[in-house]
Every structure is written in C-alpha cells, then in structure tokens.
Length: 332
Length: 298
Ligand SMILES: Nc1ncnc2c1ncn2[C@@H]1O[C@H](COP(=O)(O)OP(=O)(O)OP(=O)(O)O)[C@@H](O)[C@H]1O
Ligand SMILES: [Mg+2]
Image (cartoon, rainbow over all chains, first blue to last red; front, side, top):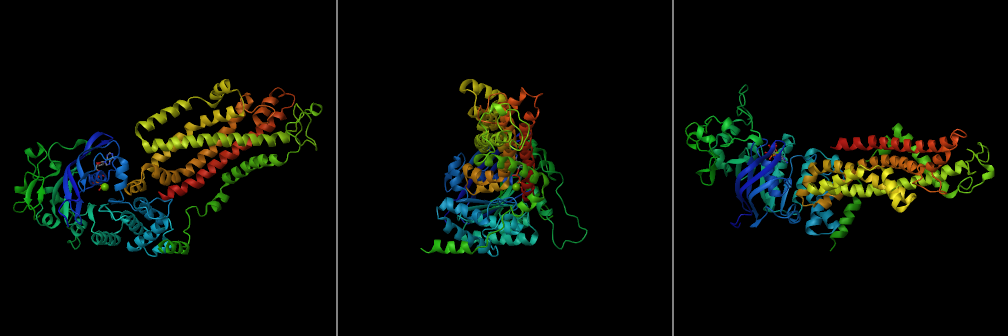
C-alpha cells in the first residue's frame, strides 16, 4: 500500500442557496484516505454528510459555492469541467444512495442499468457488458441473476434493489466507493446483510470507502477511521477504536449515550441530546454545538474552536477537552 | 473469444420480464371516456383514409345545376351552393384537418420538446432565455401569427400549418420543461449522474422515457386545438384555399346561406365537434391510464 493518499480533502467548504438565503452547509472539512482504507462519517440528520459526499462526487447544484481542495491521486477535482468529471464518476469514484426504491430508473431493466456504466467507461461490447452484469448481480447475491437481468426494478424488494445499486456502483471497479446511508431505508436483518456485502466487496477489491451513517453501531463495525460531523464541521476524527475508547467531543459523547441498546434495563429512558440541530441559515458564530452543550462557556461562542489533538491522529474540535475528557466526562 | 457467443446464449435463455405496461389495454377497454374518445377519433381518421381511395362523388367537381339539393339517395347529405356532394366534402375535409393537425403538432412537439429538454438540462441563463422566448411567442395567438405570415407568404395551407405549429411550441416547451425538471430532481437521475452519465445521456435515457406519457397526453389535446385553429383560419380565408375542401372553408361557404340552408353549417360544425371532442376524451383517458402507473412507481 503506497503512502500517498488516494483522496485528500483540505479545508472543504460548501455554500448552498437555501430558501432563507445562502448558508455555509459545510466548512473546514479535512481528511485523507489511502487506498484500501475505510472512513466513516457519522452525525445527525442535516449535519452536512450528504453535502460533503456530493461535493466529492461533483454533484452539488450549480449554485453551490465550493472552496478548499479535493485531490484524487494528486489531481484537483474542484473546478473540474463536468465532462471530465463524468469520466471519473462511476469509473473511479462511485456512490450508493440511501433510497434503493428511487435510485433505479423504473423504465429500464436492471441488467441494462448495471451494464450501462461498463459499456460507457470501459468500451466493452453490449454482450460482454451483459455477461459481466450477470456476474456482478450474482456476486451481490441477487437470486437467479441470469434469469432476472431483464426484469424491471419494481419487480424486486428493497433489499434486492439495494444489491442491484451496489452492483451498479461497483461495475467499473472504482477506487473509491461512497456509501451514503446505504441501509437506512432497509429493515434490520437486511441492513446487516447489505453492510457485510459492501464490506466484503470493498476488501476483496482493495477499494477505499467512505461510509456515511447516523448509526454509531454501523460505523463501529465497518470502518477503520471515523469523523463525527455536527453543523457542517467535523467535531471529532480519529481511528474508530480510539474514538470509541476516548470520546473527546461532548457531541460524540451525547451521540453515544443516545444510541438505543439491546438488553438495556426496561424503563431506562434513552438519553437524548437536549435541543435541536441549528438551522443552516442561523448557525452560531462559535462552536456549532454551543447551544446544546452541557459544558459550554462564553469563549466557546467567540470563534469556531480549533482542532485539538488528544491522541495519535485523534482530533477534537473543542476547547474544553480538559473537562469533557476529564474524570467522568467520557464514562457517562 | 467465445464470450459474446455465451452472452447471447445467456440472454436468449432469459424469460422476458413483464413490462410495466402490462394490463394497459385491459384497463383501457374499461375506461369509458378513453373508449368513446378513441372511437370518435378513429371515425375521423377512418373518414380521412377512406377519402384517399373512395368518395361517393368528386369533392371538387362543381355542378351548379344540382346545387343546394336536400339529402337524397344520390347525395346522402345533399349538395352545397356549388353543387358539390357534402359527404364527399366532409370526407376529404377530414384529410386536410388531420394533415394540418399532424404537421402542426409535429412542429410544436419537435421544437417544443427539444427546447424544453434543453432548458431543464442546462438550467441557468439558457433556461431563462428559452422560457422568455416561449412566453413572447405565446403572447401571439395563432390567428395573429397567421395573419402576419399570410401578409408575407400569402394565405394557404402551408401558412396556416406553420402559424399553428409555431403557436404550439411554447405549450410544449412549458409542459416538457416542467415535467423534465421533476424527473431531474428524482434520485435515480442523481444515481445516473453518480455513475458518470452526462446530461445528454440522462435526457435521452432517463428524462424522455419518463415524461413520454405526459407528452402523449399533451399532444392529443394540442391536436384538438390545432383542428380548431385550422377551422378558424380556413373560415377566415387564411388557411386551406379553394378548391381544396376543408371543414373551416365549408363553414365559411355556409355562412352566406345560414338562413336559407342552415344544415350546410351544421355538418362541418358537427364534424369539427366530433374530432375535437374525440381527441379531448382520448387525451383525458390517456392521462388517467398513463399517470396512475407513474404515480404508483414513485
Ligand atoms: N440542494 C440543497 N439546497 C439547499 N440546501 C441544501 C441542499 N442540500 C442540502 N441542503 C441543506 O444542507 C444541510 C445538510 O444537508 P445534508 O443532506 O448533507 O444532511 P445529512 O447529514 O446528509 O442528513 P441526513 O442524515 O438526513 O441525510 C441541511 O440543512 C439541508 O437542508
Ligand atoms: Mg444524507
């Protein structure tokens, strides 16, 4: 494995036009991903996970203003003309979406939709692409793949459709796979199967993966490193084990406490994080979590806190890590 | 290499998947307004086709001696002021009506759909320009553009077809852009873009097939409007020129004899009404039959 990062994101910022005027949906996102590495992105709904993913794919609306730098194998992607981006998408970077029910075109057969990226990016014949599509559908565990390539999306269940979109995303053997909540719309038993499938394929093909989820459990089981997002910024990042062992940010701790647990004593109530996610248009000037934080101080609201290193490659965007990581802080 | 061979063997072994349109005809035959609309439209189409091979009399031969005859065994609906057989005139008139409708809707459809698809795919100032241009065109009724065109190129069938066709473009632009924008916002388009498809491919493979049913319905309704416009233009003398028969001209001819032989105006009027009613019912029926299917698959 070479040491040069496959994807390197520096100070990524995204400004979007919302109904309430322009708003900074993402700011100061930094990370690097080497070939074969997996990275998790976790956070509440609306914190900017999908916007970050779409920025990497170059799929944000025209009106979005993107700042910073995204490098793939050293080549800058921000400002790349769309025609050049089209050659990367589906070929070197692929994405799986949340809703398998809507991510497939109802008017085309699944075989066509899986074979299409192959024909476009690799220039194989229609017959070869069809054959490869069958092999792929077989690999993602679609029963009777050879018989069902000519069926339409509505003839499949949600789990089967997500298998099909996985096959579609992996058709061209991309270097990077972005999975944006690939199992949120599926029921629990299917969720595990799909995640195992994705993890297996990522390992088998030596791909890098960015897995987006709001579920800490999913992140804990599937990625090497993780980033916790809140209000458009990364509030904590580090190796998954390290972050789970020593949570530095009050938000990460809150997220951890708020997760539902099997075998919890009956009657114990889930601890939720007080307050709600701030609207994009009126994000506070300082720490975005300030309004919901139990240990907030006046200086938290002054400016966006810098990242504090609390361990090897474990960073926390909080000026009160002495308190949050002190006795009792992380154990609750 | 045996790969292609194996592949074709594999494909031919696959049972054809049921298409989403299964049951369309079964449901169509149970839909009253669709059936009635289809029957009326087919009557008009049948009349036009019949006139190509047979008419009871020649529709252009003038026979002043037998003018304004009442219905008889020889002339089923009588004759007009020039002694022409009404049935023959109606049959041949159906032909001009359908021809004008098809060509005018063809013009409106091809230009309008292309512009609408471009507007939806490009967004930004391209969309703005196309929409403002179509608003501008829409401000001129067909009659007005026909008068202007007739002033330049002279009245006639070509003039009226062009004027009606141009008048139809903005409607198709709007309908196409509106429904195409809705498709562009769907997740499978995002997924297709994530798979590396450019906007041209997405337009052809994803947007167009998904708005086709809306366009078919709109074209049916525009066809009815084109027939009305053609009749109006012919009535005003800007459309089909004599001796070429047309329903609008028949109305025009009947006008001077309205009190003497009112039936001369009733026949072409009824023909126009049947065609317009038939197409509108057909369009409504198609809307019901095609749209729920799309809605269910959302
Ligand atoms: N195209 C857009 N135009 C304007 N605002 C947008 C757009 N897309 C997203 N946003 C806003 O940006 C913020 C971040 O959205 P994003 O979709 O990244 O959230 P998320 O973390 O993926 O949430 P979820 O878990 O619900 O998917 C939200 O406040 C959302 O309303
Ligand atoms: Mg999202």
